[in-house]
Length: 378
Image 1 (cartoon, rainbow, N blue to C red):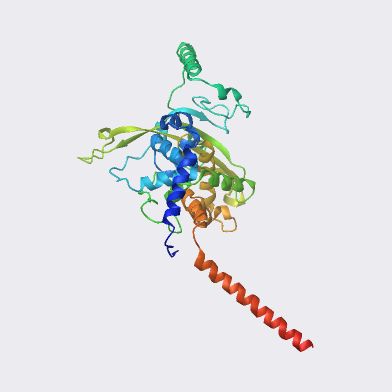
Image 2: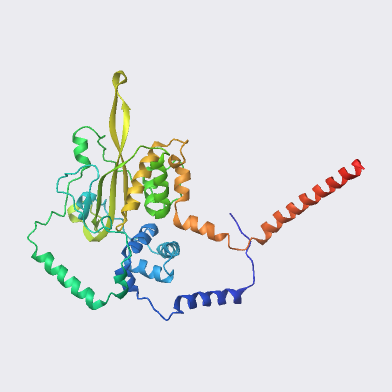
């Protein structure tokens, strides 16, 4: 879509930008990027996920510059990401190697290794904690000191950081299809435009980059009746996923010769969706399909919603908008949707005047016709 640039108004624009800075600074408070990084974990995780750039520091800077607006912060971080060179491709990250901080299953009470609740708001009262208004650094340091002391003094057995996959047990019972390893090189939606029909790798990339609220809303629509039965969380994990790259000089393909470059914190969800399968002689059996979701940081709701939409898009029935890949994938991107809505604030003088002239001519024509009718009646 093309637009005609409107010249002029330079001084007004400069004053507008100056006013924007004033609004950020008028209370005389300067937010430290380190404080944002230390105290806005969930917002940082959301911005990193939607930006496809894992950097808590840069996400904190974007949040400061955007004055807390997630959409604007994602826009800033995506723009910065587009300037970065891609020097390496990592080896395939194996979720089985995740160092787990939190791991639950809503499908099974007893799972190998046990349920690990970890850090979550799921079991807290959703009441405002007014004590946070008077929280001090001294009080925080005392609390942390007591916490560390209790943690190291505890006689409870610390669970292993590595856990087997819950879904593997369903596969052993023949209740889930065994997935063959597919080493096809995934498509990269950041380097090649999306085309339909899309590949699953494209869908998963767009879902993990999707606006958290939009992904959640469409997944909720799926559950309400637009395409699937009630899904269940087979396994939800939050933890650090190690990343390896090959030798940049020798380009070795041997895994033991690869280089460990760091961890990324992710949330991973495997959703179980019951389906009725017709077997021989018309016998129907219940089996389970899986929907997969993974995203940066601890963003469990998005990972679960992503898993629901992944399974929904695999069905591909056009009668459900939540199974229409074009409808879903084109409308969940934060930058695309926010940018298009925001562009409506830009000058549309020429196009609107054209429509206005058309409306006036139509109105005038109607008045002439009405006058002719009156003359004929007289």
